[in-house]
Image (cartoon, rainbow, N blue to C red; front, side):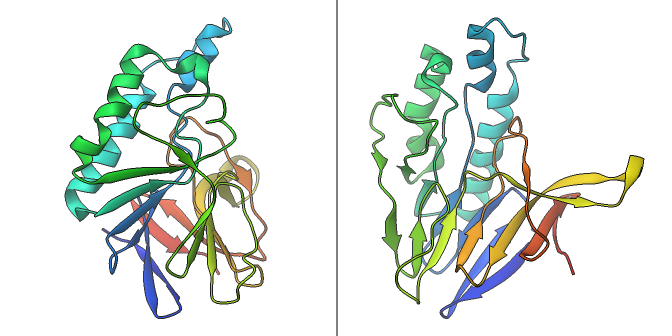
Length: 212
């Protein structure tokens, strides 16, 4: 996989083109913002929306797990889009995920997960994991050796100008705040343009490329 690396406190974190973060030393796979059931949530409000997005997102996750064989997968919030999109079929797919992944699945609760019950999956509060502080919304850790890994923002970078302008999902690292933002794993999520003051790696043509 044409990935990039970020080194933190002696650990190597791999920024993957599948829009996920891999800590190989501990077998930890981190991703954020799948927003499963988003199409069904829109449909429940009378807005027509294609329903095939979840399958692509879940297949991409399963393929990644088959390649890396993680010991644990942690979703940093917004696994689902809303309780209105939690169909019986989606509940069944989420319930089967740990077995299909071949490892434990954990969820750090996000704002879109609130008010929903997922069988066998508890929405945890932000927590420490080694030298990482895992949260959905960005935070600044109170200990100088910790790196906050977060989602929520759906960071993107804009390249070029005018009609040739590209909006690409990216990883964004703010060393002053000791914070790494993950791109949204879900395809139907949109994005927020992050400042060029941050170190950014864009995802393009299945590669992770550092921006100057």
